Image: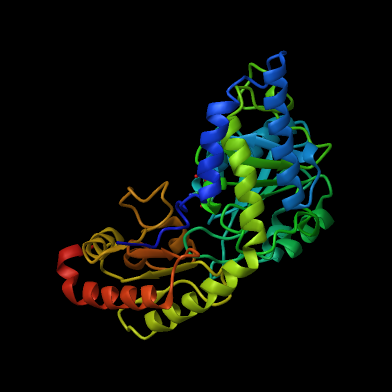
Length: 382
Ligand code: PMP
């Protein structure tokens, strides 16, 4: 089996597995305890905060640990909306955000907030001009992802950040950085990002831990209350093994970023030109996108049917974001990019990791050809 779903979950670094095990065995004391073992565990969390801050170019006081990027995104969006509702109840986001941002906005909409959803162009890129035009006096938050998880499109964050702050300097800027970190440069200061979410398990770290960078001076209304952990922002005993191992993955994948891109970009380019040579396929990614994600559709063939056939042929691929892949609806992202219903039901996502070789891509190409000829439109007909 060849695994082509790194954007859903990347296998952890050996060091990450070892760290989780070691900390679980040796440092099980609760970091809030007053005795020495507790203080030592608290120091491990603080050290992890410093490592993450250094990798992201921010202050340790700006790093908060959560249970994953889904929580980080919920906290950024709802926490900012609740905290700053005195300033206004308007949010700007895009039609291609991950459900953890998108559905948080829908929930706020039901509660009386106004949300402007900005459409991307045909490549899945958001025009900064459109963001700027949507900002009002009562806009408390703009949330735009770095790299789209389904098609890999990269958003012009520096320009978006500049336009947001020019339109309303009190509007906060949140970036979902989950698919960008370790693949592209992360420049929070240049983007003028106030809030930034990260998911360690996408960068070969552990599951069950996430990061939210909160610029010093910004307050969020907590979603989880009942304890003073994470400066009162996120109650609950800290996942110390996860936090320490996450810091390791953030550092290691940050250091490996250029090598990662150098390795996977030629593989991505090769696969893109192969796919473009197949007239039945619609290619939804491009060389301008992130180096690790390729999306294509076989209009008329459900993505699930194609993915199952590819699995039979030894290739594990995704249809869309793992969080919504079990839904039989067309992809919201592909629809927003202007694809028709048939194509939006047929999206396949292939995501690369640093283990892949040109020989692996060759095998994938053969499997794609075999799957295409094996599947008749009637089988997966939509
Ligand atoms: N944002 C994006 C862009 C993602 O791809 C994902 C993972 N599918 C998430 C947020 C959620 O991350 P987590 O799995 O850590 O909750």
